[in-house]
View 1 (cartoon, rainbow, N blue to C red):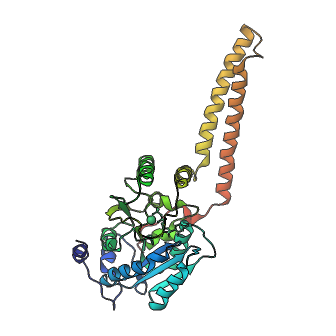
View 2 (view 1 turned 90 degrees about the vertical axis):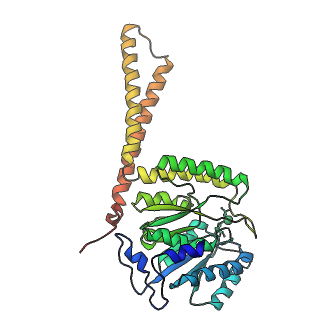
View 3 (view 1 turned 120 degrees about the vertical axis):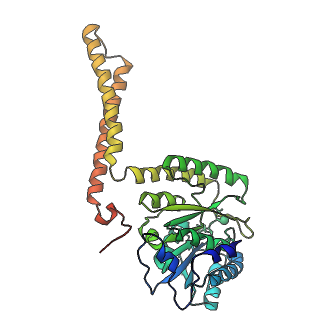
Amino acid sequence: MHQQHGANRAMTLDVASPIRPDLLDAPGLPAIKPDAIDLSLVIPVYNEVESLPELYEKLTAVLIAQHCAYEIVFIDDGSTDGTFEGIRDLHLRDPQRVRVLSFRRNFGKTAALVAGFDYCRGEVIITMDADLQDDPEEIPNFLDKLAEGYDLVSGWKKDRQDPWTKTLPSRLFNKVVSSSTGIDIHDFNNGFKAYRREVTEELKLYADLHRFIPVMASWRGFRVAEIPVRHHPRKHGKSKFGAGRFARGMLDFFKVMFLTRYMQKPLHLFGAIGVALAFLGILVDVYLTEEHFRVGNIGSRPLLDFSLLLVITGVQLFSLGLLGEMLRHVSYRRAEEYSIRQRLE
Ligand code: UDP
Ligand code: MG
């Protein structure tokens, strides 16, 4: 089925001419530089030594069949189990195609992805996990979907092979993110994704934001699609993310909502809440003032404390919004204010 998919694509690529005509033909895309690598695999690896040989074999079989100029970039994220030596062996075996970065310590998956994005040379970039849970056979399907004109194609572990303790919270997480961002995909936090280079160059990723790549990309105006992918149970080693990921993921969710919606205009968030609270406080004060002249002795009313609290908090929040605007003004960078899909010159 997979072979057939690949064969159906409009082109077959020649190693001698590494430009992917189907990608060039996709509607409204910038031209691909002829001297570039077509496809980079970016693979973060943290203590996955047993999976490496099989991963390399399977990947290579699929990539060779694509007939394009490709490279595999491994990022050793501070492994301590001999992973680096394993990747080094692959590099020595295939020095042109296997490139390696090795971190001094474990910086986390997001950092590994960012390093890979900066280092790789491909016009199309595919990220995947190193633990053989993602199936390299899906790569042609990702390329097919990109060729339809999408900028980011995200994998959906439709039939996820992980324990329910992981799949259940994950499903909840995905539902919340999808309904509050309006991005209609099922699986945000999937390491298996394909990108056009512009996306990886523009994304600002740090501190576990890899879970929200489709949100960040869509916010910048990139076209995001999803395809179902086969998922395998973990054969070797163990998962690097425990239950704590969901708590952190939820905090990060608020961070992402803030960054994508209000980062540009903090006063619109803090100012609006601040004004609403202060207004409510002032209304209560007006009522109490009237009471003071009519009945007298409002000094001991709890409502007075409450109204003061509302006014003070409101003013504080408003000031926080103004501070945010000041930061925004100082850190202003022109190129970040927009994202250009095409230039006609
Ligand atoms: N990983 C990494 N740095 C980390 C944690 C994980 O590079 O600090 C890599 C890991 O080696 C694997 C991928 O990220 O290739 C996904 O990790 P894992 O399989 O543990 O996640 P899960 O499948 O349980 O979501
Ligand atoms: Mg895994």
